[in-house]
Image 1 (cartoon, rainbow over the protein chains, first blue to last red):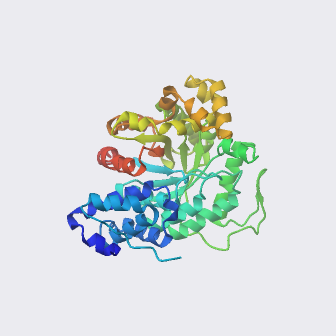
Image 2 (image 1 turned 90 degrees about the vertical axis):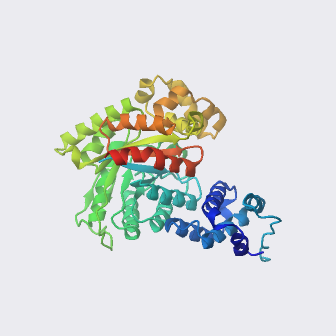
Image 3 (image 1 turned 135 degrees about the vertical axis):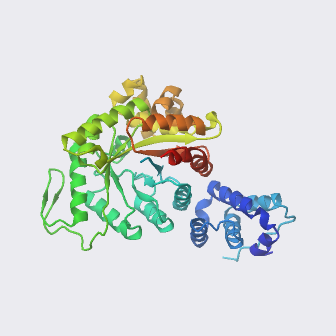
Length: 93
Length: 334
């Protein structure tokens, strides 16, 4: 399952709500300092452009949250109707 | 014209401060102020990121001090920021926070002179003046100039709390940042600023007067009050005796709080904060309660209301609540 594939499974009518949910989770995440800076910059760019609820932005938000709190990420995706979510594996370091 | 600012203490990750600033800009805030303390993230790094991701909002340190940061570096920092956000930079400077300065062995020596001279040095540098600067605290030779030109005016706001610093703000500042939240304190502060304005032969319209408040808004009053407690502890610790006595706060309790904070005994320091201190040193409550309190502050003569830390129990939600339910009340009426 790629991040984009996961987002595409969610109805676009829920994108706005999902973006807010992801953003709140990221702003509260204890490990927020570990979100890769390339993702952080993309999130700030989408926020500034008012595109936070776009498909591409949601993919970024999902990847960012998954990088610091995979468990919460899965539970949010389940809240939005996805079942048996399997997050993409991080490449081996 | 009423304007609204928001203050951030960069204790949080730089990208969160930037995100909240973007949010504030979109909701109609006019200014972002970021505090400058050695123990938080660097103010200019934070401001650079904010400058990069915003388009309209004005921004600057609120406030830096001339003891830890030499004014020539402050001038260089705001001038450089101006290249990222041309015409949007402001510079707040005050004597600093006594508790934080003492932690690094820096005394608050001659605060009025230090701030007056620092403002002079910053202006001299930004204007690339050729003459030497001969102050008692700061001296600069004729050749001590920027190698680059600053294209925009950078207004300097003087952060003040006591009467003398408030008068100084009125006489030399492009703005005054009044560090208070209670209408009685602000009314008196505005009077002192006005005294400084008159003494310098200026007009009140020449300067902006901002109330730099400790602020918290939430849908429920109780939720709004809770995050104010740590901030109130710091304000009590940093307030002069005259202010504490005016609000019926024991100097002994204030000393104890100051001591506990300096020694990182957070539980003791915050536990000593009572509701009298919260009322004296913050604007907090539901959106309707905040509207009433802010209206009372504008009646004192201020022109900018700054929502300072902590903002609310959840920062994003509170900025949103303020932007949607409080700010329109004032923006639409003006």
